[in-house]
Each structure stands twice: as structure tokens, then as C-alpha cells.
Image 1 (tube, rainbow, N blue to C red):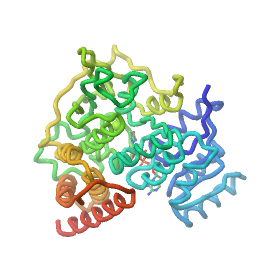
Image 2: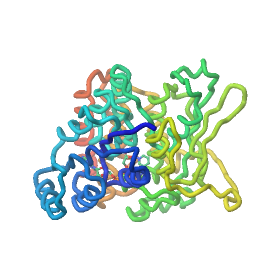
Image 3: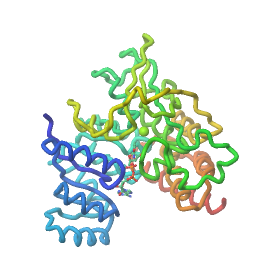
Image 4: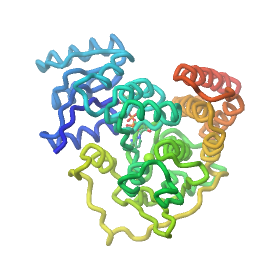
Length: 393
Ligand code: NAD
Ligand code: MG
């Protein structure tokens, strides 16, 4: 049995709480070294009471003071840290063997990279890290013998049906394509004339998955699938032309690999993130996750169809950015994050998300990203450009 000492980045979010649910089922397998919860201090205090981590990390001094007050009431030994450097420190500490990277957005880049640079096993939920810095991140992981295990359900599915000794060479393993499935989100059948009036409350109501707000909006625009194509490109060394996305509204098949001989291998299950989380945490063993059994008799049909770029322009923009390479995926991600935040606070319309991203992609810096600093500066510039675009809109 492998025993992990874990740091959970983003412990208070949807993936973070699902991870702690799985961890609770296996008290002898996992020790919690650090929990990082940003601003949700009361949830973090409850998690500290249940899991007794050495460290808890929050955003700033104000949250740290609040968390210390809450922990004092429960006689906790947990030490409270704050700030971005603390995130990287708990992700790379020598005691830690595994890091769950479940912070949302570009804020997850630095600590996830720190975990890879320290040679940890990285349970990767934060897809934005790979979209921003794919080549640099994968190189860092390789050079430091960090193991990257995909938590994202599609990539986890692909990982499960790839050959065990897969080395990134599709042809050598007889693989033709990697096929990501997508639910199509809440607006798969909505009249296109109603898209301008879509509200944040409608957009975050996903038909199959309960997730954080940002990824829920990304699923509604299908930018999520676009980010996931780029994620798959880096994780599996898969050329863009050999990646496919297909709409499968039931979210039962989580993704597939098409082999040269005509075989297509799929991974199935109920839509519950505890399954891919448990797969990653338990490797090489299979451990209980708490997910319900897939009931074939109750399933009815499984259906599939092609995504429509007129309905989902963000998916097309992501394909374009993936093909363009260089800084384009980083710009795509930054513009999307800024636009989704503006949409959620009621500043722009749903349809302005794609407009913002398209505008940003007209201003991609030339050349290849050679450093994280260059990527962070492209990210910052893109956010400023997006804010100016919202003002003008
Ligand atoms: P969430 O919004 O529920 O949680 C985000 C977590 O990040 C919280 O713990 C929050 O406190 C923390 N956080 C937010 N901003 C931060 C910052 N600036 N610095 C430090 N911490 C910060 O999000 P989620 O749905 O759990 O998603 C997390 C990541 O996992 C995302 O990258 C998402 O794309 C990916 N993912 C999520 C799911 C899912 O089912 N929820 C599935 C696949 C992939
Ligand atoms: Mg996914």
C-alpha cells in the first residue's frame, strides 16, 4: 500500500472537498501536510479540525488572523501561513510526496510548477497551468522526475485506457486519435437568439456535474473543452490534428482512445470527480471513492454528435490557439479568465466572453515562451487589454 503525505492546493473548492472526501475513506493511506484555502476561512477551519494538517495557507494577513482565531477555539496545532510564496513552500516541502493542484485559474501556476520542480507526484486538476505553460511545465516535470497524474475526468479516462508503458509516442503504441467527450453544457439546445440574455445563474447550472463557478461557465461556452484539448496535447504529446472532441450529453463515457486496429477504448462511470481523484491517489491500486455504481439498466441511450462552432465560438478559438502555439494558449486563457469573471459580476454578456477572447487573440506576442516570467507578463497584459475592451463594450 502506498502512503502519501499530501498538500492540497485549493482544499476548500469543489475538487478540494471531493479529495478530502476520498482521503477520509482511507485514514491509513494518507496524511495531510498542508491545506490551502485562500479566503474561505470557516470551511478551512472545519477541514483543519477533521484532518489536522501541519500547515494551513490563506490569501493574506486578514484571513490568517481570522483562521488563527477559529483554530484557537479548537485547540488546533495547525500553523497558519499566508501569501503566494507560502503556497509554493507547502507544495515543495521535503515531507510532501503528493500535491493536489486544485486552485482555479492562473493563480495555480506558481505552486503547481513548484511541486513539479520539487519532483512531487502532482495530481493535476488545475488545467490552466498546462494551457499557460504546457511546454515549460512538462519539461520541468521531466527534468525533476515529477509524476503528473491527470485528475480532469477526460484526461484521467485517457490515461486509464492508454497502454501502461505509454511513452508519448502515439505511433509506436498504435494510437490514431485521442477523443475527448463533452456534455455540451446547459445551452446545448438553447435558441441562439437567447444567448445574449443568458444570466450567470443559468450559466453555472451544469446538467451533469457540480463544479466551481469558473469551470461551470467554461463548460457552458465549451471553452472548457478547448482548454482540455490543449491540456491533452501537452499531457499525451498528441498533435492537435489527432485530437477530437465529441458531444456526449450523458457524461457516462469520460473519453476514449482510438487504436490503429479499429479498437476504441473508453472509460465509463457516473459523473463524479471522486472516481478520477481516487484513481490518482490510489495508484497503483484501485481504492473506493464513494461514487455510485453505473446502473446500465437505468441508463437509457448514449448519444454523440459533432460540436457546432456557431453555438460554441470559444471552442473554435481554443482550437485556433492550440494550432497557433507560442503565446496564443496563454493569451486565450488569460482573456477567458478575465471575461468569465466580468460575466459573473454582471459587467458583460455571455456572448461577450468569446468576443473578448477573439479580441485578445489579435494581440499575441511573437515567439516561443522561454520563461515563466514571459508567460506571466503576457497574462497580465492580456487581462489589462480585456478590461479596456469591457469598458469600451
Ligand atoms: P472552485 O472554485 O470550487 O475552487 C477553487 C479553489 O481555489 C478554492 O479552494 C479557492 O479557495 C482556491 N483559490 C481561488 N483563487 C485562488 C487564488 N488566487 N490563490 C489561491 N487559491 C485560490 O474550483 P474547482 O471547480 O474545484 O476547480 C479547481 C480546478 O480544477 C480548476 O482549474 C478546474 O478547471 C479544475 N477542474 C475542476 C473540476 C470540477 O469538477 N470541479 C473538474 C475538472 C477540473
Ligand atoms: Mg474535464
